[in-house]
Image (cartoon, rainbow, N blue to C red; front, top):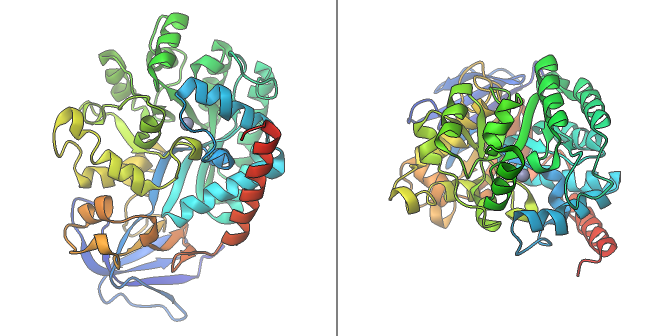
Length: 444
Ligand SMILES: [Zn+2]
């Protein structure tokens, strides 16, 4: 570990995401925590310096819903709505993956997240080889909460993904025991039934029970698309969110991706139970799913974060893409300024941390918090003229602005270069693996 190591991030404009203020200040990191923020910080001997001149220093970004194992299907699942996208592309793809391909996909996804300034993510894996995802995350330094996708029923689900209910629960419990809390809590487990249409009631109840027993997170998709929502209603007599809540999938440990098609009772229920919602505007547009009514959710007091979802439905894992969409999309329904830039930045930082149960640990910069930090250089055309940093970050910057990234006090990206993996090798391997999977599946 790095208890004694000190890093000084010097000369930047710090945006701590505590209120709507910013200041010129240095940030001193000792071990895995922020020790001090201010001017004239006493610098320990042997301290490493990171240059943040002409840069904004923010909490590392938090994404509340991604699928890193889907990375090799990027650019190969175009032009389909959700259920066809799943049945024709995503499930056959996930069913075809070897453990080595899961590793290649996970490293491509994690590299993209870290390189884009995302330090924490909640991830849904695939059904098999989930240990491989955690091993990649351990090595590459991201703060990851993840879990194998659980499926035990459903039309056109490949046999390789359709598990026996008890086996799915047993394997999830084994994975949770191995990974939840590993590396000082940098890795955590989330039970991840895929969605109502691919899970029996018994599987969903079992996942909720394991979450209560072990303290694992619960993560699923809910009310994403009109056809899915209609099918769930026919099957259960309820909306997805209401049905999941009835089975115990609600509360502070639960994160529901999408929540596009909700009735008033479901919105009230999400707020009352403090259930987290992952808003994924890029994915919802790509799959023509609809627009989650984020202003309505926020006004009701629902916990909301942002997520890019999977590379095949976005096609990038950029928090900047999601932020720009979240800051503009809701104007269509609610008028200009519906979700202002500061609120968007909150969704990408401390509100996302709250959804993940990491509030007070990450998502804000303050002495004592974990040192998950993203430094954004402002030497780009769209950054100028510099103004309120929230507007600059949300509407003017992109992944190319990411200069330095720290996770848990370790520098994982420096001057835009990934330090915890060989980026060229990861991308080259992903290109070959992606082509091999596409060939096996007969994709043109
Ligand atoms: Zn998803």
